[in-house]
Length: 276
Image 1 (cartoon, rainbow, N blue to C red):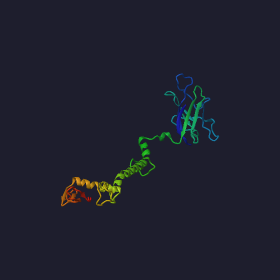
Image 2 (image 1 turned 90 degrees about the horizontal axis):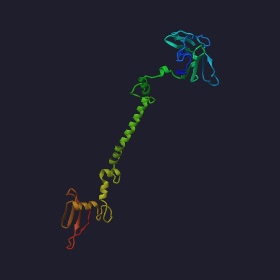
Image 3 (image 1 turned 90 degrees about the vertical axis):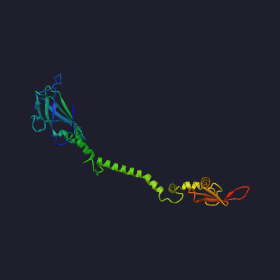
Image 4 (image 1 turned 60 degrees about the vertical axis):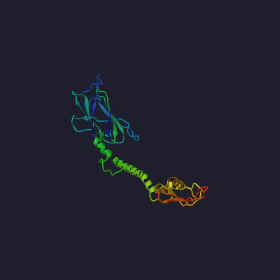
């Protein structure tokens, strides 16, 4: 059974070419010479029932037709018995393709020596003959009017542009996070103890070097012993003048701290370390 796609509509005006096989042929040859009014020759169609209506065979009134004539409901004519044996033109009534169902079956039968012919049509909401798009039409349908300048977010191209813009925006925001964080850390943080101040001013290192490792007294007292004071005493310029020992800072000019050296003969004791 041949199955074709046809748009469901009230005015189809569809002319079909059908092949009628000779029932006596063992090679599948076509049957020639069947006129519209041949004895016992009939045509029917059936549409699925809808709400209790339909589902029964409906007769098609066959009528004379010419090979190149205008559409005429029920028209029937043999195309060319010599060159196309078994091929007939059949003008199918518009009622066959009316809207309301999704398929319909047509049958031709009864003429002497003919095998029955059946046609099945899938009824669609569009015309398959014009609905297929070219490559350019497909691109236009998918992308919109042109591949650039989309402002309508309902087109695929517009959605892509909106998505791309959103992705770029997120990427930009994410990309700015490190610099923003760094800016927050390194600037406008002058209060000792803040993380930004420690990064910017080496406060963390300064606090570690100035930590009391001696008596535990408060910072800046004369009895404090710090890592910095010890390191300066070991590596920096040091002088002892009149029982006064002076330890200089890294520039060898500024005093880091000083202490009194006792003048006892039995021992030399440094007292009063005062870290700068």
